[in-house]
Length: 95
Image 1 (cartoon, helix red, strand yellow):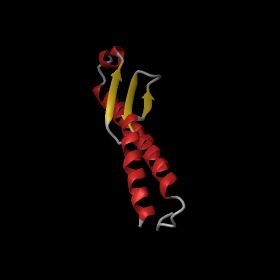
Image 2 (tube, one colour):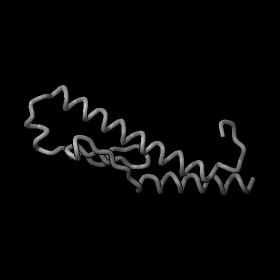
Image 3 (cartoon, one colour):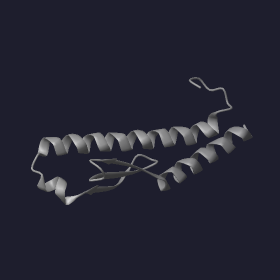
């Protein structure tokens, strides 16, 4: 029981730590940059002005969507890896 309480405490700390970690995804040679925290919150979106002047809103929307999805996947992988470090030796289902 004590081990379970310790693990819960470590999981809370890990989740809090993830909020402070970020991953970055870019597209169009860096013209679009998305930064997402380890707890899947978008922290920053940078769009170079030339992307907005292009006038091709459909292409821009596609690039933006793909970049956000990439950033979210990276964030989810980061979180899964951190949590796996805690639960790796427990023999939980799915491991």
